[in-house]
Image 1 (cartoon, rainbow, N blue to C red):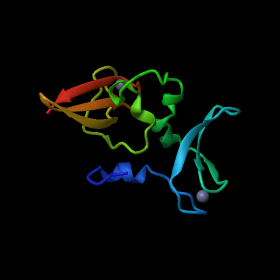
Image 2: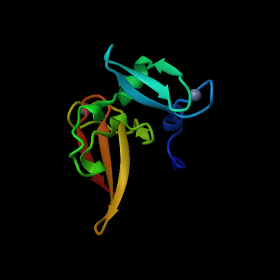
Image 3: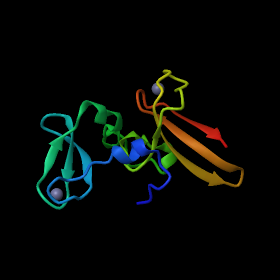
Image 4: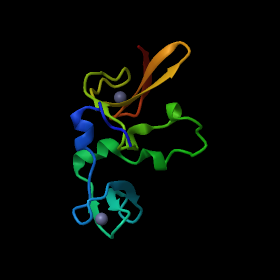
Length: 124
Ligand SMILES: [Zn+2]
Ligand SMILES: [Zn+2]
């Protein structure tokens, strides 16, 4: 996983197991319908803090049929950086997950609003 160059915030949003130091993965607790983080190498599970809901597991509700990352709700992806230097064109919220993809026409930045899930892109 390459997170070099990501804003420091993105790095801090990653959680690590206090027992085994492994990366914790988000999942939805189906019994409580709450977000929690679990360790793949030991039995450690912790409940998400309110601020973690920015990376809520919306992906679970999304069909795996969606082909590319461009179409996915990437708010649940803890490996992607987030930025507060944007304003969502749909709701005005100023935090979004972003990633870039390059094509023949150049580099495109894709944003995914943390509040409403709206997606937009900017040519750079
Ligand atoms: Zn562990
Ligand atoms: Zn929004």
